[in-house]
Length: 167
Image 1 (cartoon, rainbow, N blue to C red):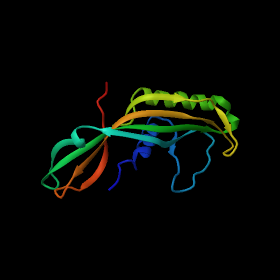
Image 2: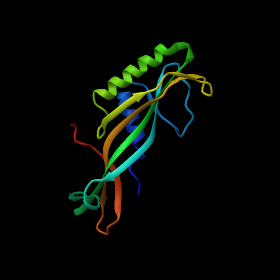
Image 3: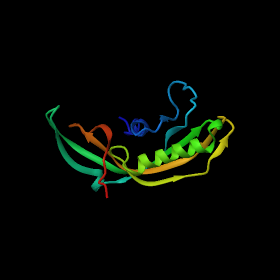
Image 4: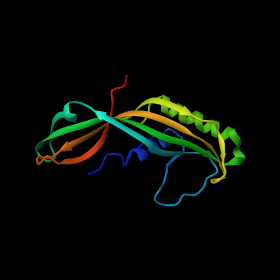
């Protein structure tokens, strides 16, 4: 069983790339080439989960594929993403600022499916000597639901990310 968090970084990076913001996930399986354009590096810095109902029980749902009823459980979650912007030094702070403006536009006008943006903040652009690049730390806090289905034996099948009501 998973905690449903494996694909969340990829979902955020995919959303940003779809909005024209170059994004990759932190800690990839394969080495990545250093580009000449700014890039947003997506990490998951935190996940706080709370109960959704009585013992996290959300009700039952009929699974047509298995022909059985499944019990649904869930938790409200607050996900803190690191969306740090890295850029080559020769582009100066202007490249970082343009990337930040595009990132802010992508997040403030929507967000990945199933995630509702609650907070968005950034720090100052600094020189990262280890990576030999400019870096601007950015964080986004999103609300989401982590839901799971239990099979007939009472064991959880798997967790998945579900949407939240937009307010």
